[in-house]
Image 1 (cartoon, helix red, strand yellow):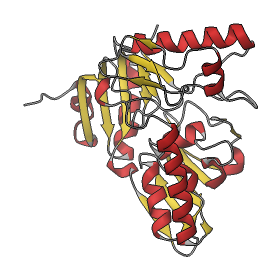
Image 2: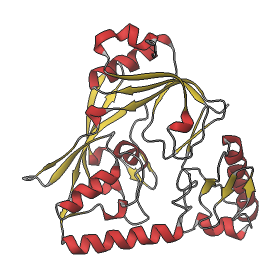
Image 3: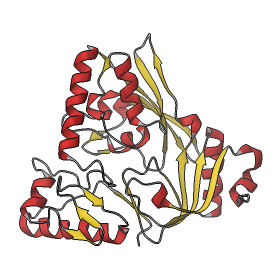
Length: 305
């Protein structure tokens, strides 16, 4: 039987959720890579989230909030801190028929929003079909394509600033850039309101199937990865640059630059974080030397010195 952690002991009945100690992060990332986090905490309610973050702050324990681990590379040594994820209360996805908007928790999978919109014949989320991860993570990095992105759907965002309380932002309060936003990094996204457009259900279905088919043909979706590793430079394709420097298909241990799409590094089975990192650095060095372009990773790094 699992013992009671000090976090559960300190918070008592106020805490609703799960606390796992020395939890391998390979179980919680799409890379299937990563050593243990000192604490892996699922907070199921707002009160639990407030209590946990305050306790971690008071105890001097470093912590981050993660989604489904689809954009995260954790070191092989793990993370001497707490990884917090949003649980049941933050997974809601409700539709307002009158306003024709969605209210979505940050822990909800983006794929669920895509399905819910399609089922109602509402357009605007076709670009996100097949995109892994949570709505909160999508908002953080303004997930999307070169032409469409989640920020264009946002009406408002509610967040928690630990130690200060809840904050509310209108979409216009946030600068939405390519794979980045101006949203404060010391705040936790809790929920958002998303707009929809009237659409033809058959046209939506065709657009989604076309986008998903293109993803399947051009991306290694069947292998563990973090998705795109680097941001595309302005008016350039990272995949093309990596191909041109001869690194498409390159390997380091069980990690490989995908032969299908060079901006993906895949885990062929048992890959280590240090191997993925070596390929990332090799790409940055080669592209930098040949083109003078500094490639910026999209992936987040956790537990590295």
